Image 1 (tube, rainbow, N blue to C red):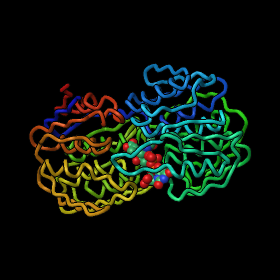
Image 2: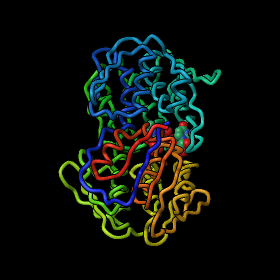
Image 3: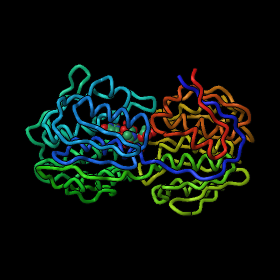
Image 4: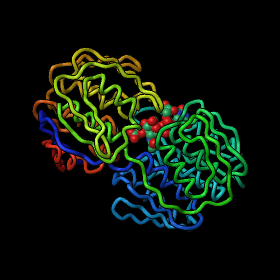
Length: 418
Ligand code: EPZ
């Protein structure tokens, strides 16, 4: 298993180009299963492990998937298997996104039920309840969800929680349902609007994406289309945290500041300077950051996927900050590792009280999930001495060419095989 070695303490400078969003490309790949004719061509797709897993899953189902650079082409044609096997689903929960499209297009789907996850229980009851409301019969059998429906029927669905992949699954399913579907309390993340843009290009009729009420007029047939994936706002926020904590100056390019207003507000309050520039914005920081409180929430609130990276910044800030994690019930796995580096953090339930310390010290630490591992990279870049991060396969799931991008900014970082 690879490890990352970071010799910290360098103010990082230069520019970094952001990749397409993993969490937009995953549902887009699943949506390709809806196309009856003409290929789906996705551009600006990040080269990360989760994308490769989704492509393998589509391949196992019988789809022809061709990757070239940052483009992926999915050729139309009937699937030969309507099953998402345990071996793939257990490595990536987002495989559940194939359930809605398969059920809508083929009237049948068998998807391994995603198990537990490091950051929380993560049930999929809202996905299943929504599909049942559209007339699907859903059975759980030997760890697999089996869905059947002659043809899905439009329905009014209220989501108790604005689940991101829940909204995406039901949105995709509703495009081929008979009649109209309304999703209330829908998730409003930019990735939802990006998926809707692809589905519309494929011939779907959708209104209200990006708001809490989405209306879909079902149709009988969708075809392939070409679509460019939006930039990755979480990768963007991660590099902004790198600039802030290292007292650096980084131009983040190929991104969209508008998708990150809650994060930018908090970073500015912490004393980071953020100025629009070119196809992105510049992040610079001189002097010690200030402690700022943060509470995570569904979009447009502060993203839970940035909580850990922001906590690493607050570990070195002047004063105390309270970080409340309100989306997932177990997303403080990075706290114990940051403490190993000398951070002063106490957790109580959904809250973490971070007392800023003047410096962190490099240490051997362990990655536990994707964003927790990103926070260890952020902390390691500012720490004195060497940080060794193990289990970095977590990082590879969602960050592409991380060492290369960081080295270009002046970081002393390298991957070692162990
Ligand atoms: C998506 O996960 C993202 N993943 C996550 O990013 C992200 O953290 C999360 O949204 C929140 O923003 C992808 O898009 C592939 P949810 P998702 O359903 O859809 C509860 C990353 O780091 N819930 O919005 O699985 C759930 O338990 C990953 O890139 C139900 O109770 O998250 C949680 O508490 C990690 N029942 C809350 O809703 C359901 O049926 C939000 O989860 C569904 C969800």
